[in-house]
Image 1: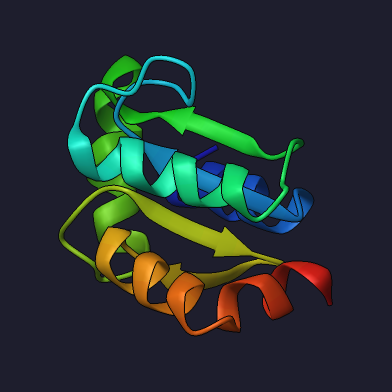
Image 2: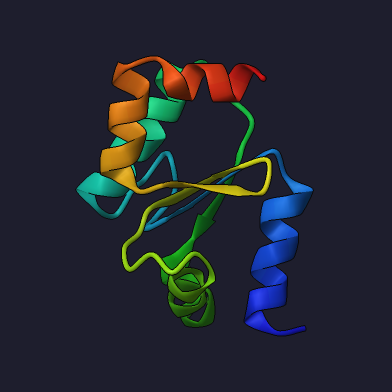
Length: 102
């Protein structure tokens, strides 16, 4: 299975997937920490967090998958939502909570 296929399966088989550096409990960068904290603030307890530092293929592959150069990346129901700044903005205006409830 190619790395692109592996990513496609991950984002379509799970309702919420966060590609990040580190884990929600031990984030390895400020942006990943912010993204995980926002998901927690939304009341989300059960989501898939993929530590891109553990798999260099995923780390590079996810950037190509969404044509988005940075990590973290959030996917909801298979759809690419954005990185830390977009997640924060959507949380502040209530859009993220609505997406997660739907």
